Image 1 (tube, rainbow, N blue to C red):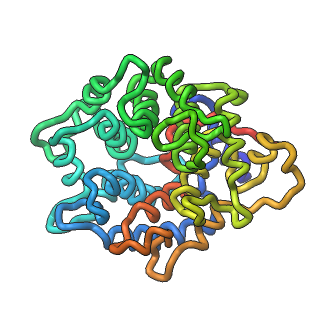
Image 2 (cartoon, rainbow, N blue to C red):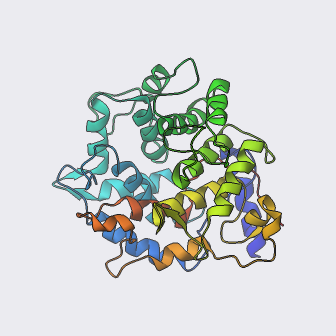
Length: 344
C-alpha cells in the first residue's frame, strides 16, 4: 500500500521535474518532530524588520528561513505553495513578516545572483510572480529581468555561486539553462571532481557546499544520469562523506555542508538515506558501512530546537544551519529539479 501511494504521488508531481519523483523526507517518521521543534526555534529568531538576518548580511538568511518555515507547514509530500505562503505570513515581528523584508530587499539594488535566490527560495515556492514580485502591494520588481541582465557572454552571472543559483532559476522561469552557462559550470570543475567557491578549476580545495549546488545546477540543466561532470561531482561527495554520515567544512562535521550534499544526492535521483547512490558512483565501496546523513542531521538538534553548527561559536547564533537542515530533512521544495528515481 505504501509503495502504491508513493507511485501515485510520483504521477501527480512528475510534471514539476525532469522525470520521476524525488525522495522526500515526508514519510520518515523521525523527521517531523525535529522539523517542528526547529521551525519553532527559527521563528523565534525573527528580527524587528521581519527578516532573519541574524548574521547581519542582507538577503543571506531570510530566503532559506522562508523555505524552512514553508516546509514546516506542509501536510503532504507534494509541495503546497499556499500553505507555505500562509505560514510565512503568519510569522511576524512588529507586524512585519519575512515577505515584507524580502519586498524591501527586492526594491533595492539587486545583483543577478540575489535575484536568482529570490526566485528559487522566495517567489516560486510561495506561488508569487517572479516577473512582478510585490508582496507588499507597492512597487513590483521583475526578478527575471534582473537575472537576465546579469548574464555574461561566457555564461556566468557574476560570482560562481550566483551562476549556480542563476542556472536553477533559469530552469524555473524559462524551462531551460543556457548552454553557455552549462559549459561555464562544467569548465569550473576541479580535477578532483569538486567545485570551489570561486569556480577555479585549478584549485584542489574541498568545497562540499559549492560542489553540491553545482550538482543541482547540472540536474536543472537536464544532464543525463551518466553525465561525466555529474558523476565526478557525486564521486567527490561519496569520497568525502565521513563515518558519521555527515560532511565537513573546514575540518568539522557541518550541518550546512551535509544538508546541501543530501539535496545534491536527491537531485541525482537517489535516496540519500541509503548506500545505493554511493555504491553506484563508487562501486568499490559496495559492502562497506554506510551512515545515514539525514539521521546525522537529526542528532545535531539542541534542546532549544536549533541545529548546532561549528559556527555557533560566533554569536549571535545565526539561522542558516537550522534552515538548511530543515530543507534537507523535508526535501519538499528543494531540490527543485531531479532525475528519475534510481535504485540498486
